[in-house]
Amino acid sequence: MAASTTTARTTHDVLIIGAGFAGLYAVHKFRDQLGLDVLAFDAAGDVGGTWYWNRYPGARVDIESVHYSYSFDEDLQQEWHWTEKFCAQPEILSYLGHVADRFDLRRSIRFNTRVTGLTWDDDAAEWELRTDRGGVHRAKYVISGAGTLSVPKKPEFPGVEDFRGEVYLTGNWPHDEPSFEGRRVGIIGVGSSGIQAISELAKTAGHLTVFQRTPNYATPIGNEPTDPAEEAANKAGYRRIREASRNHFLGVPYTDVQPSALAVSAEERRRVFDDRWNRGGFRLFIDAFGDILFDKAANDTAADYIRDRIRERVHDPATAELLCPTDYPYGTKRPPLETDYYEAYNRDDVELVDVKANPVAEITPRGVRLADGTEHELDCLVLATGFDACTGPLLAMNIVGRDRLALTEHWADGPQTYLGLMSAGFPNLFMITGPQSPSVLYNMPLAIEDHVDFAADAIAHLRQSTLDVIEPEADAERAWVEHTNELAQATLLPTSPTSWYMGANIPGKPRRVLVYLGGAPAYRAKCAEIVHNGYQGFRLTGSAALVTA
Ligand code: NA7
Image (tube, rainbow, N blue to C red; front, side, top):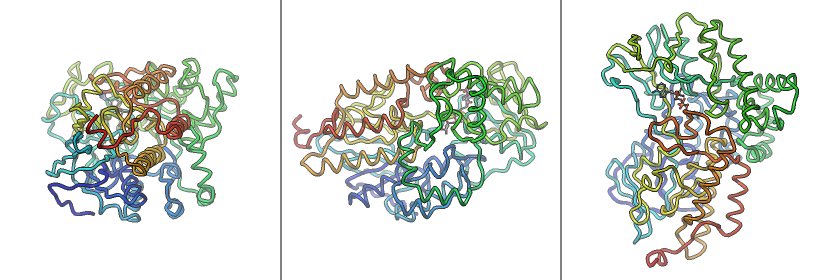
């Protein structure tokens, strides 16, 4: 690991924020491929990004590991062996550690260093970045790989600090692997993190109490050990697989989607749903019928199917009903994937508590007290309550752009970006997988590579001329925001009352779609067209022109 020396002032070509999938690739791309002087920062003690922090029991990837991995280096993808179809967090962290070793990336990263401020200096036409270690670093270009789900939602429950037991946050899990053996454990939250954790905690806790507000449409992940023959075939065909992935809405090489759930007979629909359910992963969501996310009647067929399967798996009918989502369409909240999640509720030592009907009133020194006065005594409380998604990581960094414009001000009514990659008034700042890009609706490592490559190409383009500043035109940004909103309105997403896709999980956060819903292929084509047209919608200038502008 690189020594975390605090140098008061340094100047570089590129500053990179984060050492997860995005930051690591950016260091390699800009340092090793473009030959630039780079310096990266991460608040964590080592590489990994989201996979460094989310080490709760059951943390696992939801896209097949063979696809959820870097594609930029053929030798890397040939030599790495995934032990399972959907690998667990420790293995993904080892992979990222291997990437850091293989490309000697750690020497360019300052760990245990949080970025606390980022200010555009109009006169020098460069960014000044400040850290919590007192460092002040300057560069012409900044790449934010700060992530999309890296700022956990603040606990909303009064009294948390007075709880006499232990409190754990899934998004900031301790490294010493706490034991829950025989203990009374409570968990609040049944999103992807909660659902993964509950399946594991149920096996060890003495008693597990699940506090559920909104039930989720969880479907089987279908994990299994890697099949050597399949691995060999994947490695032989990696080039084709990556190409197919990049041409798919979600960035996975699935090819079986049918046009409409309403255009087939009930029997055929059931056959398709059964097939996708059994094959696992996001196939039911994205590889069954193309209208599930767009047409309520089509969506109802999938929602009914999932509810039936939940009722088959949960023995107690009242518990099963409580686990069945009814008041929002399938897929409008991020669909979780599971292994034996519903079976956990068949255990005598697992209890489901409905905190929609009877909300959490406070955390007491002994446990969780509900609105009706009932108190659940606990030794440990796990908060799986989600993240300030997509905009949270950027807004946390005190970014101030041209003319002292704060990003918090520019985005007061929701994110404003061009391509979800840059924002007007914030020159030379590339927001990898930023809001209004496909990001979390695209296979993340591929989405990251696309964005880092776009930024690298743009910078290389500038450096070939006398120009050194790129930023979106205000009109282009407005049109992009409108376009992403229109795409969202054509889907069922805005109908979900609490989805983080819409910023609806954080009290007071503007309700705006945070992802681009046109799919990765349309997005990639749009980016290519913009570059082809000479970076249409961007203003490319030289510092001298900028100073006098
Ligand atoms: P999510 O999907 O945002 O889930 C958070 C869960 O916590 C969800 O069930 C929430 O219920 C619940 N929650 C949040 N606040 C409260 C309060 N105040 N009371 C009761 N319950 C609450 O976060 P995850 O970490 O599971 O997943 C985030 C992403 O990480 C995931 O989609 C993957 O991409 C990886 P609610 O639905 O708001 O009623």
